[in-house]
Length: 171
Length: 171
Image (tube, each protein chain N blue to C red):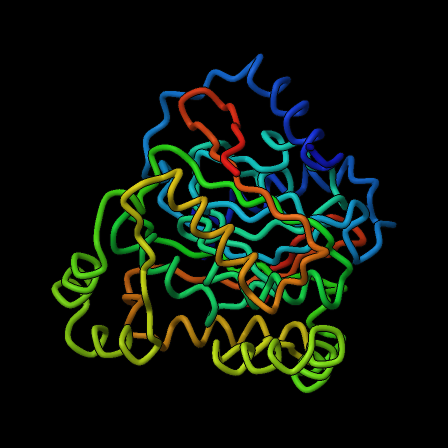
């Protein structure tokens, strides 16, 4: 039986389909850029960052973590023509609120020692950060320093304010 | 100097800010679910899947790859209360079009042997898949089989058709 979340997906999607007219778009992003931002529920990248359907790849994970996104970034720029990266972290991010050891302890307490072992086996670094702007600078530096992102790819770093909806450039 | 992509971000965002009235939303997703989907430029999760601002975490990577999303998923369900996962892959996905060896060869050809070494050092599996529905089933099974996702978390798998805008449930 469908959950209420699944019903919402099906019902909302029927409405979306009824006016959908973008079935002709090509696979590669037409504006040749990608946005890397956080999974946070308070961010709507298309609306807040002016991304029309078909324009750009959008990568989202906990904290807009660059190290975690290398696989997707390389596919985007090496296979699908992306030439620019916008990295956008945000105020009020959950990643500002804990440390790796806290998260490991919570997993062990809630899910048991086997789950704790799986975390280690998957080499999971949760990637928390103590300072927002510094984290943006560090992740932009990580991308710029990587051989996997050629110098021809423009990279900028931003902060989105969940309180105001505003973005500001950091680097 | 700002690129045209950066100018578009700043200008579009000014318009967004001018009508923004959601600065009060809480950090945890109010509807306690997460959507894991692809970074593909032809997907607008909020519009196509009925996600209002504040409702749900949205994780996006190349191929809606579950293995690549464990860090974010664990943060979502262990630290921020998520109780349900919708995994949504899509037709026309780039991940259907190549194999790992192809991508490794392209990186070495375009970016050189040091980049190829960095791929290996980062243990990057690009995660291509030959069959779409099977890939949805496999990734749902991976999540259900993981100790990091408790049995209490509902998980369903879907396909989004980029040609029609329609979602259909696979599992």
